[in-house]
Length: 593
Image (cartoon, rainbow, N blue to C red; front, side, top):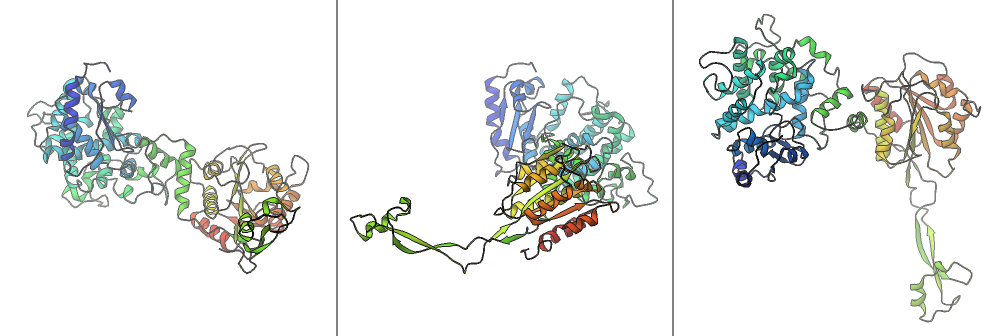
């Protein structure tokens, strides 16, 4: 924005007040000095666009747009602005993990308008921070709102009136101090009543503010449903923390919903801790008129069962300000779900001789490799070196008594990604989760993995042979093609046609549905699929498994069993865990679990 120039004295004054602002929260508070941008262009380069100040949780930073501060008439309020931004780091949300949890809880209470959860979470945190700064520290936070309202030409929405009226109630200000109501004339009953509830919510849940997030969202739901996004920030200057998680690490524990997400998504009027009536949503005679979301509607936006869907998981991460692709979201989602189910991957004794040990010395004679001479022992034997007379070489033997070192079994996994298979980036796919569990288990044991994603003819993705590159493997395992169905026999054939007898054993794992029977088709060279499979199983020397999501028994299953394939059906998490452990402990005869 264009505005008045920022004098150097103002920059110095705001820098000098930083320590005092830190002390508003604790004398032990330590944060890096703020980034004071003297132009709005410089602030935009720091990522500040929706407000005159912002925080970044990734590097514990505060960024201030001083040019916009001057334009809004806030130049004389350094403690209020700086103290507020520090409060986001210290009190609410304080961490990326807490911010994610709050957004997740609010989304349940906002069916149809879930995208407003980040801004709503920011406004809720502002209430808690500002109440403490004004009530306990004596700052004039209300003057920020008065100054910005005076500089704004937009008309406040009903939601914004309710929000500002909440501050008036919290701080015992005369009605109309912050709202656009005439002094002494109350706002409409609904707005006044909701503001009273909101003030109770802020005070009652101040020490457990995350637990009040769903209630605050439910209180605002009716306004958002009626007025849309414009209801949130009419002046367009209060978005100081919605992208606070940009650049931060993905917080753990988000793949599974918090139990309080559902139980906390209630209107404050139905919370016995706030309504003073002891009523809850379970009371059949509760006649209180509320504007929160209907309880039966929340199921349309929340996950059923024990896990959040991948697309919901991604929406929460993006709401934190994280710029992630669908595949990057899927990798983090399935890795988190798989982590607790990682199992010991099978290994086999190394058939090569035991450890080589030095046993002594013997003469070295001309004609033998010059590199075999042990020069130190030769010189110690005689300072005069005479080839074939004084030269010696070290003799090594093999420790036959040492047990053979275990060798992990490599994993060769083929994931069906035809149109009949779910897209693991959108919906929880148990076959993809099974593959992730086994891939991570194999890598943890030191095995190498080759992964192939397949769909129709010539529709496939594969790693560059067997590798230990986790990201490259999961990029294939969790991808999606969505075409026809044709097993990539040429990949299976070429993998084991080139495999030597002294290579480590490999287990062939096929994840599919009834489309797996295309493995019996002829390859492009005219070789029957049965022959390709038989040769691959023989040369792999580690067995083979089909992990299938079936709704019947397709032809070819019994023939596959006769060829040596193990058939496993996976349709829920319990079946997945049971399969993974059976795979590790029982699929291989004579292997260690």
